[in-house]
Image 1 (spheres, one colour):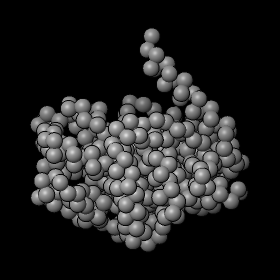
Image 2: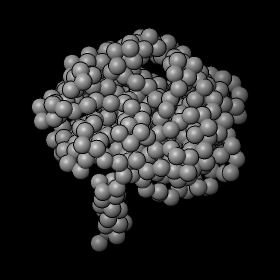
Image 3: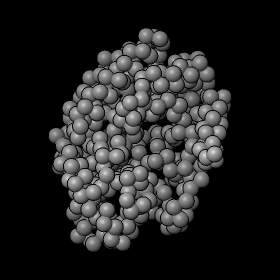
Length: 378
């Protein structure tokens, strides 16, 4: 008998019950699509993917290492075109809340410092170096109301931990570093390295202070790049501390995206879970918004994601809850394997068709629009 698996199953059922029976309710059929990781470099190219595979790093065994990359112009325009075709009762198009980081490591400068100093470049500079895309494409999506960036952090990287392991001589990390990859998943790490993607995870008490500065700087960069404040935030890998909420609140963040389980970081790379429901308030009067639907076809192409996600949307509406869909950027990227993007866009289209057929009164919203409704009690 696997007690850990049984315990996990019980926790999942408890979380679902809490999500379905507590918090904000509405008779309106509200659908939000939240998509994380926009702006982060992840796998730089198909060439890098092939090279690392030959060097013994199993990048083919993790969807994020296999498919995820900076969005090309084609990736974004195909996604925008699809979303604009499907409109709700108010004639608003389907819209992606694009949770975005604003910077990536400057690998050249970091190496010049012998991994003792961290330097970054704006994600717009990474786009120029690595893709045919630019910020103007992003702003086209914003203008057409199909793509709405929100703050996901300065970068999707635990900086202090990453530099420490680079200095320690991790062969795996140093090899990946040479090809401008930092995000080797823990599931494929042969050195059993910890997660470097959980940007706000904590190894010692000094990390809390450095995180505050990173959040503050990243938020200002976001505002400067996009020309508006981000009213919502989601932490990389759903890992953040109540202290981070205090910092975000002072910056003007009112709504905290996430799953039902918040991974609260403790010193020594440990964590505990804290559970939430949509509409719950914290001590800063910030509102938690919990994802209750999943559309992640890149993670398991053999699963019928349209059917499973549609059932979750139906359950949300039956329980008078907004349907908040989790669908990471990786599902819409085709620069490494075009079929990943093309197949998943077809699935997304099928899902939107089914939703509009069953619920012609559906309303497409961004995360901050939903947060404002909850805040006003509408």
